[in-house]
Image (cartoon, rainbow, N blue to C red; front, side, top):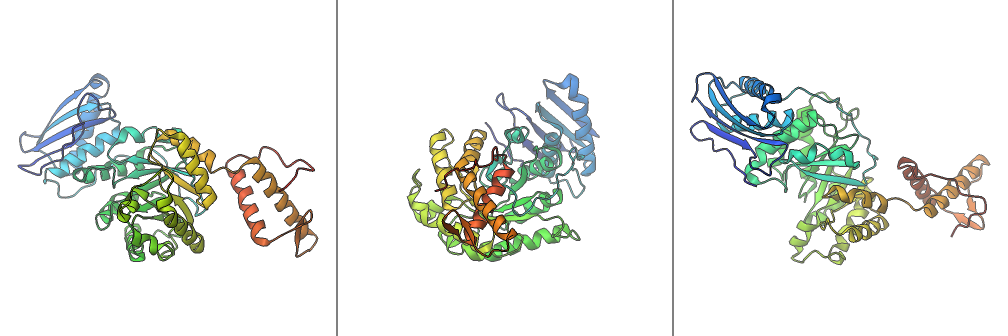
Length: 416
């Protein structure tokens, strides 16, 4: 699929995609000064139904950006309005003729509001920031979170255009309850991403390639600066640093505790193993130390630990085994690259019925002991320590949140 970045030469700019295999996108070419007024030439299979709306959108956006005289060529492949707006704005900015203005499309969704620090984050689905076709129905697959990615999945020449697509998606795409995350670029470029996306109130910002706590605080400061008077305690935007190097892993606790806006830390194993100079394997022995260190640092800092993606999207059996192992190590969830990975991840991170039954009995014994004013909790002939009770309470809470409390433990069930 061809990619073309604008040239900023001779007042001409272009953005978007074209070709027979393109869908839910369009290509825009703008040449400033080659027409008196705005001359919009449109090619679209749906021109009879939507041609007038696309032309009107082009005229409104260019007017908002201060471009009054230009020849505009649009090749549409079924793009939704938020994509039309992003591509036209990107092409216009690449002409070098835009000096200001705001071309954000009208908001078509009600912002879902902030999430809590302990929000359920078993799965987070990566969506390339320059591929709107993947965003439109992503929420229908029911991931716990979607990540609109501006970093590795976006070609360097398309960073500016992807930023506008992601910004508009946050205004216009319904992700059906999924937590809305944005992975910005490595600093300092990522600070420019924040300028566009923070006003649209994403729930979480993922910070790639973090090696020092100062990087987290730099992002936090920029977020606060953009938001102005918005109180973080009332409407939090959380941060999730990604550790992707040996140095980042060694600084895991300092990074996890760098700010009270850090909600989780995660690891990027492709970059981490490359930094070590070793291949990544399905068994993961080469990354065991890093993953355990991350979990330990997260727990010590009081934040969630999220595992890396499982990169072989066709190996569901391997994914399930990896997910089960991740949960056993203490991870709260992991990333995914394809919707088919979501359900196996949710199953891997779900407690078993036997675990639920045992946890319910422990919680019941604790509540009974409290009601009697006893300082010691016992279950049968066994004494139950406070950390065991806390773990049981967390497991019961998880089971309720994901709808797995289908039955209470039957009287006389064995507990091992």
